Image 1 (tube, each protein chain N blue to C red):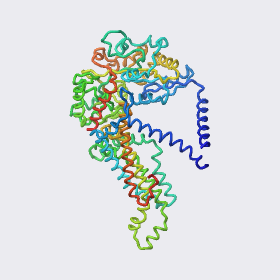
Image 2: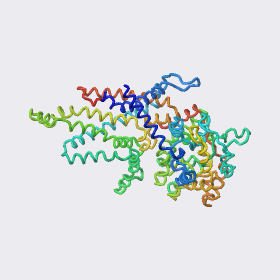
Image 3: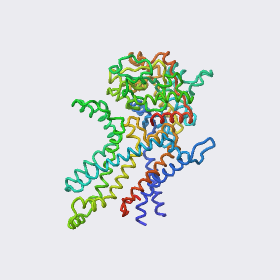
Image 4: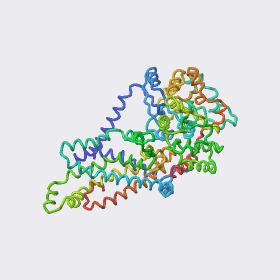
Length: 274
Length: 356
């Protein structure tokens, strides 16, 4: 009973801030406002098949997949280096990794805008060396860059956390049995780090596919992601029903793709997400 | 299970107790656009009336509407644009104002602005105007083109310069559903409140063709970008234009000859108010000439307050960008609230443009 009591704040939190909002999203998603009152409908869900929305969704999926892959490629070696460095150095490196996260996410994104702009920092430096002005901002490239920059720590930290927990004796045993470094990595380290990789992918992919702020700031409003569409439904049109319906579809697609990814985690050691 | 209930009860009562303790001073909740009111005005009111003002800011009417509609915070005074006033009024979200409590308003409101905006008589010509019972104007202005004279060597007189390939990559448009349609609709000679599907499709096609020329669709960043010489031409509100000119002398603002949108932001009391009396005191305080002048200087927008206008610098009083001639105003239109279907039509067209 004591343990249950301790969990109650968390349960109340979940009820108010997860279950209740989710129930509201489902309620709005499956209903519509008509002159006769609120009626049940599937129209909000079906709207995803509208070529306009579907296109925005595909673009979101493409950019966020690209972002996830880049994050993984950057993060894995970084996590390895972090895990293998000495104690004092480790603390310092992790500190530097987390440091930017102490600043507000919007400020950091606006900072990128200043860097990438036509007369921004990067172009000024390029011009100093006689290289012509580059169109950096308001492109899909800028949006992916913003995503990678903002979400990279969410990939590094889970992988790092798993790597430092790998028992050194396993690696010693592997080399005792004649495996070289590559084989040890492929057969021991990588499979054992999979749970971290999977939670890293989840933590990068989900915010990336749903973002609307990064695409608005760094995409100059010219790149329309599914997040932007949902945001506009709520803000411009005050149409909570369509907004919720599209959010539900997005949620189901995310759950589905996460379920597929976790299949790769054969031993079921995945970070307990599924 | 009982223990859990006790914990919940304890938490709830603790919360409600702490809520009671904090409210010794009367509080006024205002919800305003960013950088739209001199912070000194808030301090003055707090001192004079011995109250505490809690102020939040928003970036678009739609964001404000969504938040007030949920009733999450009981705002006492908000500052919607005219079309949003109509919408809120239609949904019974606004309190009726008692003009007996607004002596400053009655004395200082500019009669020309008042009759341009509000339905003050029963003639059919005024059917498109607003109901004066629910709002008073805060600031008014126009939508026009801000251009950089070092990048644009011709005289800007028409909206069509925004569709000129010569300025490809140097054009900033408004990232806002209604504003973005002003240039094409006015160029085509249609009303900016049109619900005619063909007219709107024509305008949409113009904006789709224009998209490759547009550097970005922005709202608040227009200012910084124009000051930083990032673009040659931008669609902007008149008040913002005045502020940017202070920081970059190469910038000029013009209301194109085809006409434009004349807008005003109103002061209203939403039905969420807990203290209507104090809210009315605040609104009348805003109409005191010295206070209205402070806000006009701070925001750069045009004041509908004759007392404050007289206090302004001659340079501002004579600036056609801030206080255009009555002929220019005659070609401009107020945004009408288009109803849910009308709004969705505009949003659909806008998403079509953004999706290209």
